[in-house]
Each structure stands twice: as C-alpha cells, then as structure tokens.
Length: 184
Image (tube, rainbow, N blue to C red):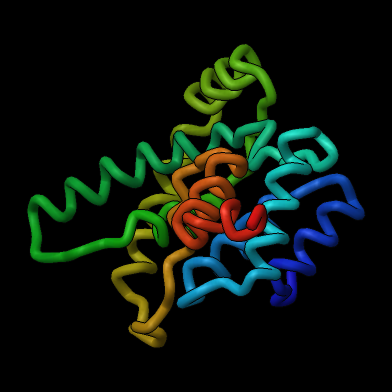
C-alpha cells in the first residue's frame, strides 16, 4: 500500500466498508510519527471510530486462519537457537531462521481448532524430519551470511489489539480535549 494520509485512509474505508490490517497499520504509523495531528486528522479518526461502532465499516480481522507450520517451525527454531546460544558465544535471530525454513516448507493452514490439530499430527508424523532439516540449513545459512544491511528494521511488533481500542486510544492520546473543542 502506498503512503496515504489518515483522511484518505478513512475515506477509502468508508467507501469500501472495510478497514484492512494494512490501513490500520498505516494509521498507527502516521500517528506514531506525528508530533501533533491536525484537526482534520482528529475528525477523520473520530469519523472512523463512529463508522466502526455503527458497523458502517468493518475491521477485517488479521487472520481467520492459521498456518500450523509457523508454530511448528518456531518451536523447533527456538529450541535449536537456545541450544546453540547456550553452548557458544553465537547470537542467532529466530525470526530470520524461521522465515528461511518456512519459505522452503509446505504451508499447513487451518480455520478450526480441529483442523489445526489434524495438521499438527500430520506434520509430526510426515514432516518432522523435513522441518528439522530446513531449520539446520537455515542456521547454517544464517551463520554464513554477510552483514549487508545492519540497519534493517524488524517488521512491526503489533500486539494484536482490536482496532476500535487502538483508534480510541489514539484519539485520547493525541486529542484528549477533541470532543470538547468540537462541541464548543
């Protein structure tokens, strides 16, 4: 998604009837980087909040499904990284190792708890060796890589809070007196 203003994002959400996770993230980024929001931005956030509360705009959930392979790879990667870090001076980045392995393993998506349990069982019986092999290769590659981009920025660490609470908190943080100003 290209860089947009809060007003354009809200306008797009009102037009589509949906607020996507990318739109939500962009609003958060703008608010985090702004010293002070304009009255137009406050009004747009207030309009968005109202539209979310009335259902005129629906917040698209981040995920309505899970990739069970992610949890299996992360569990294996964390165990292996902890082992290596405990016995050496080497420091490894779990996210880099997991991403490398995940790019080389089949996804195991599920939309229900039953489906996720089935996928876990399938992976443990059919794919455990392949998972371990990909984690080993990921660690070897990680240890052998040049340090090209030390300034890399890790993807946003969103806590998964609901958009309504986020918008409400943004309004309270950046405009504690906004409603009073609007009414006077």
